[in-house]
Length: 460
Image (cartoon, rainbow, N blue to C red):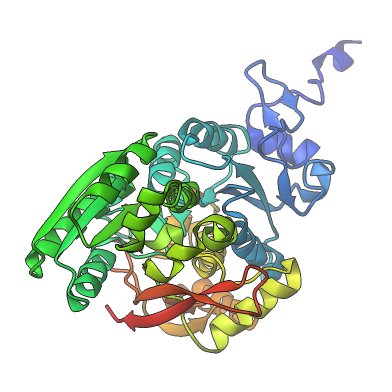
């Protein structure tokens, strides 16, 4: 009787790791000192493998990564990242297995709180070491503010605001790396290209309509300065939060040659194009102006959701975005994405960047596991500092073995992905990339009758 009373309960615990070993992935040690089953969240239902929540015991030894994307507006980038997870599972080159949980922060701009709540779930309930996503600079900052104190790495495929440079480690080193990464270059590159495009076409006056937040405010200020420096006559900035239609009407009436709309939300671009033809007066005014849209507008939703109302303006639209790479790497990624999800790699911006972001995290887990002895956010960050010099590696399935070999030996690699060369500056932990200028053209082969076309690419 005395012996049986001295044996602790099977579900007693001191840490989450012990619970995982006993009960499987997702089990955690509660404040009462007992293990609990994995806790689910309604906004985080997409997983790979699909039965991750239903059979946690089968995945007790997997490295589970987090994802933050809109299941709607940002589905192509979600699929780009998930393709990497699905692809690595086909390789037997490394001893670790992987899974991920993707949380949906919803569509539109009013979702920063949803982003914070989803990040908190991934970080403090599921204890993921890294989060791939989200789209947008404001959401990325919101996620990072929750993740950083817990030592969790965040890597966004699209957060281009230079303001984010200041929220992480100011002078990162191998010993103290930053935990905020991005596979897209910051906006100073894009602002120069937009200003040059306007200047080369003889545009002397612009009205900049900028969504309030770290993306819109930063890019608007950069563009205004660069446009005036390149000889532009006037460049006004008007910020908006929810009053887009008011600023749309004011810009239409302004004596300017081109309107630049800056937002992180595709919904704003769609609303702008619909609103620009809502009356005969607006239609006439905007038909006489150029319309320039930066990277977040590069989404087939831009023309599929406006072709019935705003087709008259399509010839007036130009835009910019970080360019995809061309050649076998991008083509192989595009073919795999089409085969796995029936999706196009060319109909939305940052899809290739999302694929590369996931692969970089996977690569960095190898460094963390072999060189640090544990896969956590700091170890992954140290691994990311080893991908821009050394043995060349192309992001494709057969490159995985080289990564494992080199990182296991403590040697660096030099990665090229579907989005291009991924050369990170060790001083800033940021990359550069070519910037593409695009237009919307008629395309009889498209269901909507339109498609994006690359006009030219500017190298950094």
